[in-house]
Amino acid sequence: MSRIKKQTPQYYFSAKERLSRGSMCLKKGTAPLSTLQCQVYLALSAQKKRIALKGYESVVVLLKGKARITVGNVVYDIGPRKSVFDDEQAWACFIPRGSSYFLSSVGKQAEVAIMANSVGITYADKEINPYVIVPQCVSKKRTGKGAYGRRVYTIFDGPASGVGTTFKLGETYNLPGKWSSFPPHKHAINRKGKETRHEEVYFFKVAPQDREGVLRLYNEKGLDETHVIRNNDSCVVSEGYHPVVAFPGTMVYYLWGLSGKASKVYSAIDKRYEFVE
Image (tube, rainbow, N blue to C red; front, side, top):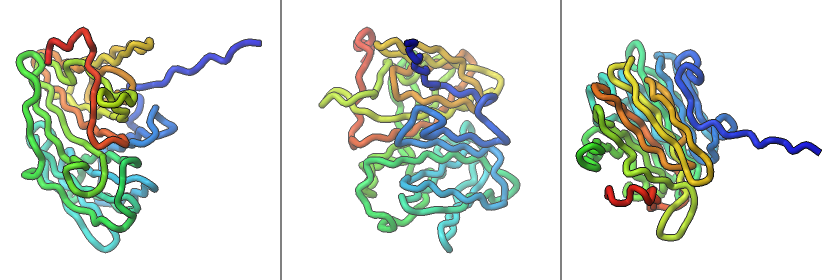
């Protein structure tokens, strides 16, 4: 009897492969995810688009332009934002679980991303109202130093928000010629006080748009992949260490979302690089 070869999951998705008519979706069934979703719309128009994510809460992050979120009879406008590189602190809107909504641009077109989470939620459906997150409320932190210094903006921190969720998301700016997600770390399994299982997705942009970066995804169980980062690519980084480097003269940006049951994220550092901390 021949053995059925186990299919290797796909973790990295190029824009050329995944983007269709300016939109992209990573979710259970299309990517190795079970509690996290990522949707991107790079040509959102004034025509309303219905979003219904049963069992998920979501945060709509404006990448470019100005957008409108309509929940029932209430309208929430976010923006404007020239681009992720021109305006580093984002506009966003939190949509609680149990709410369907409509997305549209205000003006000609907008670019938006939706990160959605289905675990670690303690509030009841309809108990929490949607709300806009303005740029002034986005926290900024310089992380690392020297060759691995970067800027990290936390847009939504569920445990700190008081909403009743463990969901977290933000944006990282990987400076030219430098590293981020460094020292290499992972959050793939639950080990009390050492590591927590959190699914994570990266959505990339690069500036200038024709430049590149590199991501390595690896673990001790045989996973070892290296990918060239190009504009509008995406990656599921939940299963291993996931350091990123930007080529000289290139800025690499990524929107990230973290989904897990634990309110505190514990990451395991690659032992070879523990001295870096």
